[in-house]
Image (cartoon, rainbow, N blue to C red; front, side):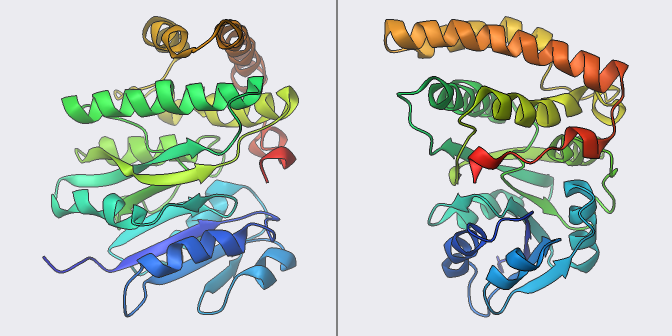
Length: 293
């Protein structure tokens, strides 16, 4: 089968120190002639740091969904790979991510985030637990059963034409895109070998800020009213508790796991207040998290 024509769409916001690494991890994997790489950013520093042979689009700084919509307008590939300017992918990640598109019923494929944060700190341990025992395990199970799943916004690919517009107030744009594709009858697949390396927050304030904007998207109407489901407070409590407790390797990690459960309760209460009751706009909730850069 002829490999599909692809577009790599990278959204970035004041990420001049990391965008180069993100692009250079992709460049050896995009073939000859090389695939189209589009960087969407609002700032001069990131635009200047993007390497040559990259199309740079300047967005108005109105949030990631707006930046993605601008990128989607200009993308020419049959498959559109979406990632961020502050992460980087593993060697051969793109091959693994694109392989499931051989099936015409595949509408999107999620990569696998892997934490770069140290496991010997509480917040670093939380990042490993949530990515390994949480998201990775859940996606593996859903892939095996053929169930709907939400793609990871750090690295995923979609079939062109299935999503033409993302609501620009979406907090969890990856969840919105996944639901829009799943509701058309296409399958969402998981490629665990398509690894993307991510640095997670190092302070509780940054952790809450990041999680409110990502997890909070699941109570917004596009996701909450969809017949397809993956994530909720109830599902976390029922399916996630046993996995989380079993993940600990020591009494200290077990204690950190218990603290994470309390933090998740704090998070869901904050989401209920700020997103559901106060209905704060995207730009109020989408605050920059510096410790992940």
